[in-house]
Length: 638
Image (cartoon, rainbow, N blue to C red):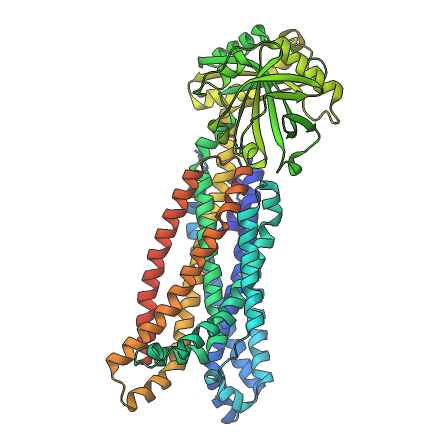
């Protein structure tokens, strides 16, 4: 289905077709890689159960090459059934899947049903290679084992493992390091660079802690005579202890996959649910025209604003409001009220400051939600409002010019600009008028180490009307400006950009909707893999434990006591990975939130709600799996 969606001709010529294909290509490879990993993992359970069968064949006179032929015939039959069946189901649901994707990204389109023979070929080859590799692996397992190893292959016991204190400490150190990175990093760009480092540390730590730390805990329980010498606990603890090496790897796999389900679904749902808030925070009006000049400041033009309004009306849209304001940004570092550095770029802004210079009149227009009094200012006075921390100095030393700070207050709404707020402290430096703003920019242009920021004039025009008319406005605005004397309208500028909120909304839905679709697809796949690993693990351990519980019954343990013991063991096996996966989710939350700020996901509440809902639903599904597989386990043992 992913390949069909990638290669479908129905998306040719659509706006964002390349982006759709890129998303589907990424999803295709993720699903294919995990299909290989999962089926190899599942095959290990199946081949373990069949080793005794192959040993019997060998004892009855079949050579290993004959057993390999049997496996080859079986593999061909299974491959044909699964590949052909999978292709039929994939064809049947491929259009529905594509229509669901179009619904998510808000596209209303019609296209004819088609069968993609290229997709069928890719799928058949990919899974044909997979079944061939599984066959070669199984034949290798048979050839390297002798008859007695095959006979006992499904019932190989393990000695009581030793407590490895140093390895346990390494595991806990890896977990601590991963959590520490997530909690302490404050720069979103650093978080993106180190996220996979933190993930790898947590994965390594999880495997080590489950393998060695669980043994340490079980041995402590064994030493607790009051707990251990109980009919309910003794058999469960002893059984888990002797098989913990194999058991722990399975538990760690379940834990990591559960974490992947929770993180993948909650983040993509959060991003998709917050699209409208993200668009509104990034685009204050329907049409946003920005004029930039790196030399002399450009004056605000009422004629330019009137021209934009005319274009809005020409597209059958109603003007709801408009404004124009001037500003410029200095990315630097303040030390006790003195600008000591002005060349701090994005990646080095964790301890820096972002100063937006703006006039009092324009600040009141573009920051109408500011709920404190903005004082009247003289030419050498400024008013400062900031996103976090404090500003206690009575002056601002800016390239040798000392401005008197008339007042300074916290402005919580700057938090909406989550990227700036996460990178460093954001400040509005409010000056008296346009003359004071132009003077401040001339000081920056004359003295700055790097001229990375330009003086800008923003023209905002909001309007109401049909979505297609708004989209046409965005498409036509650039051409309209190019057909007139734009310098006469907007002044002598270096660069002019026009951004449409409707175009941005479509692009965000394409990006976040695509991520949401892939997140749900991959999350569902991770969930299926988790369920199947638990199921095969329970079946495998049920056969391993059956003989042990039969002996226990023969020496006096009742069926009720067996069931109680099984219930105790299964609860530990089941809910320990779930609890640890929630710990991983909580530990990763600060880093994920930072990375989402790079995507301008400013509403943390939406993300938290999606995370909580995902966690509750996953816990409910996990509990159902627990009830079903524990019954299967008990039936096998009984």
